[in-house]
Image (cartoon, rainbow over all chains, first blue to last red; front, side, top):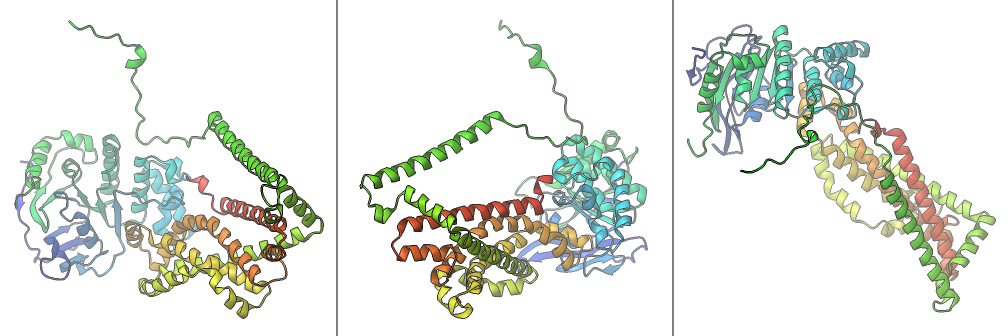
Length: 275
Length: 288
């Protein structure tokens, strides 16, 4: 068996392990004043261990982006707490990286200057941050393009610059909101593989929000399936596939991959009207 | 049986897909002869149309179909232009008006842009300011001219004030719109990178608004010129507005037209200058 589904989420009342940078404890989010006005997140608890890649998959409109904003400290939950190293989160913490489907590169900055953006806020000297940015651009395979403006780069290259911008600040936890969704399949698989290698090699944790089940299964150690809004955790799957975890094409051929994807699909509840 | 139509080898040629992660060198646009000829044809039509209108005007006044006293004629206008150039009043008046316009343009844009961008800083302040901005923007500047003359006198200061007033609200609204139209996700991204509010302002809001602000400059240089000429109309001893107003009150219609022609040339020159300034300061062409 490749999977170990646990129906529902165990309330994380147990003391947190020391190496859990990010955890959600019964978080919920309701927009509007009165009870049940517009509940987007019902109740969600999980923890993200150091070096772990966890995917959240859910039907469209299950409040994935709201959840990401809660976890990154950009928005406050109505109920429960987001724990950053065991402490409730009150603002955006240092050590979180954030990458969306839109690359959001600044058109007036070169690739290099886009990568140094986060370092500028830390007061690092210019020579030092440019050295780091050059090194990071080399890691994502864009070393020769450092002085290109984003408009001269392809979609995949732009997303690589965005990845370099995220990684160069050495975040402990990286939150990804469908970062590869706008790319064509080839570019996407290559970029996923590169990201998995970079992240796993450096022991960073990743929380990936996606609607692409294959992407979730091939990339992560654990897949959390969310229900329709107000979203709750419907199932949790540990992904234990044999093979090179940094090669997304190989992962897709691993035994057990297809059956796990199918099982998650059935839990995604994409049919309309069912509750 | 249906016969299969023969296929050329070209039709079956496989197009090679571009491998991911390979840069395309920025392509230089080739000079398109047909487009260039099209532009030349349009310019020729424009010049031709102008020539026909001038000829009709000249013909009608010489044949007394139009009253030359009331309508002037192109040849009379030209004579006044030559005369004004010869006695130096053309360059003096254009210089005075041009200076008033440029100073008012600069002052109005600096004040308006600084106010507009800084309104981004405080949502409360911008909400409070909103009705006042709308009210200020809806006042025809000419209605303020008498007060401006009383407050600032009949010299340069009052023309400067009129030109500035004509520009400031427009510049403010443009800068504020540019600053507030920034994607929230982009601001969120900056926050996760550790940006404080002043970082977001300096590194995102200002550079992202610059394009709108520079587009506004071309618009406001015309407004500044209108303001300056309005100020000269009310009360002054020199400038194009003064020359036009004086010629009009003496019923020297061709001289009025001559003043208008100089004003048009001045407006074209100023907007060309601003366009050059934009290209020089904002090298969009490097990354567009």
